[in-house]
Length: 195
Image 1 (cartoon, rainbow, N blue to C red):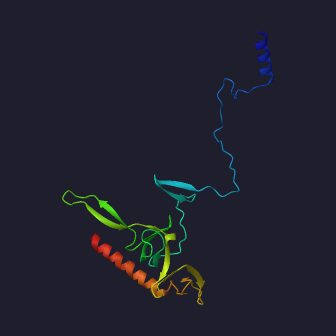
Image 2 (cartoon, helix red, strand yellow; image 1 turned 60 degrees about the horizontal axis):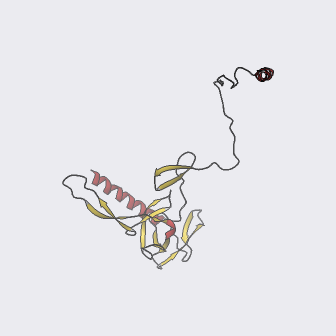
Image 3 (cartoon, one colour; image 1 turned 90 degrees about the vertical axis):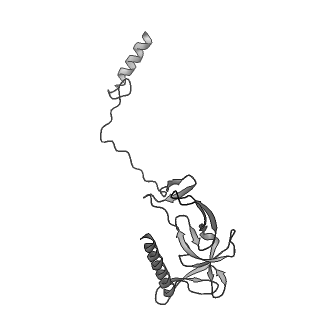
């Protein structure tokens, strides 16, 4: 009895307010603002969940990180690693988020297609699978040699890529015109097929 009286006296001397946690609910003001602390390090990158086996690194604004690549669409390349080592082809598509390229008629994989309609049979087709860009090297058709790529600025101020072994300039106005014409023809064919 004396012990409980001593505890009550000590609690009274502490002057506990009504918003304490001893038998009362805590009440917070409505305008509660957490402290914002800026870390001196870079913010950690968000990883977007795509599929169970594939992850795409993203920036804080949820856009994927696009890697710089030494090759572009329309370049002639030689495969330097993998099953198709030594083969030469032209790049038809690039994926900058995971640094892979699709080379025409190289790295062919078998795909089993389901029938879309009842009367139509299923089929087995060959598709071009992507290769990692580190497994291809730029190739000179004139001198039949694979080379690393270099960058230089011409006298007129344009920045171009060139082959280090041969000195051959890759980014010329003629190459860009050919590439644009080919893409326009491809778009026209697709539009005709869709109609």
